[in-house]
Length: 103
Image 1 (cartoon, rainbow, N blue to C red):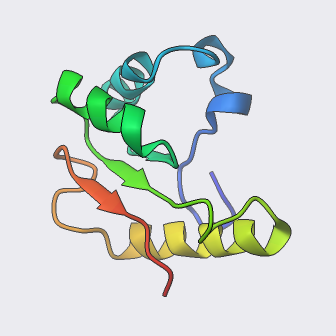
Image 2 (cartoon, rainbow, N blue to C red):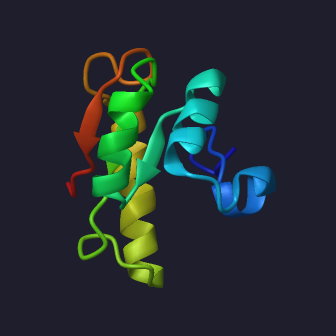
């Protein structure tokens, strides 16, 4: 749980069994847990979305908008908070694909 009250899981620190797994496996695991995936990887998750039709959402975040710097990570946190507070219809329940926005 983040300080913003969002239930998040980081693949690298919270799901070591999925490190190095193909994205279809990652998306399937997220679907099983009812989790939305946030990723920069448009091409492979686009393919995985077709292979895991019961996923509950993929949110893409472009690295140039949300660089892995302190200020970029803060923008990412704020954008995810905004998305959690005002999700598009169906996100978290249906196979919604969304681009994370800066507000």
